[in-house]
Length: 286
Ligand SMILES: [Zn+2]
Image (cartoon, rainbow, N blue to C red; front, top):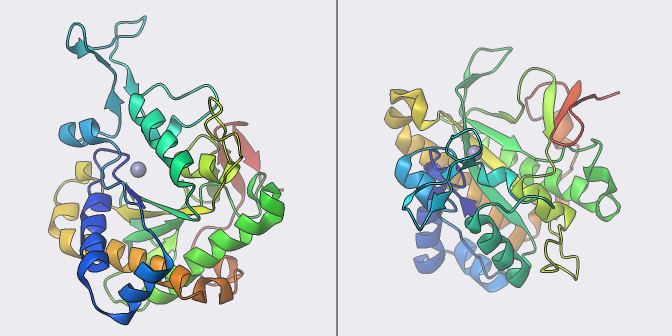
């Protein structure tokens, strides 16, 4: 479970701390079962320097001069850590550190916590506070080809389970993540995508480990001003509820019983008209 890869997205950290407390101290049956079934690894703050600066990226640093490293145009080298797990990437040392950790742990499942901009339901106008994401589009150009389509089903089951468990809380408005009407992502260079693709960088994953992975997006970046601040308690809480549902459903096996078609048929979201990719531009869904 990974939080705050983008430094200006704090609720991954806040939610993880709450889940950690329950995991470590709760005597409830649910948490006992999670402890019995799993060893849970947390990265509360993937991007500590970006978090300290409250910016999305990290800044590459020249240790000799103790100043930011500059590119050929004299600009600071800012790295989006969520685009840095790719065959020609791993520019930042955080990326290689967490990638090596992943190859040592070889997790069975992964969850990544983010924030997005403010969002409203396009039909009802109601605030969307929580978007459920799969970084390689279900039924899209990439995911159905991984592990004979197993992850295409499992990722939809995980998110459908989270939706079923959280949709009736009045303060959470849920949909599927998109990057504009009709457009969903198929990003191969993101961390959780690289996990699903079983990326082998530098021979560290020579056994070809891979695992299904999903992400959550809370609406309201810290740059959106007071909205995120005023609603902070609710926004952290929705992440805690989502993370708990995800863990609990995997531990008691209920995730695997969920109808994966709930993803397409029931969870609100845009129709899929095109894929926004980092490997082939914009690709029509047909
Ligand atoms: Zn993010």
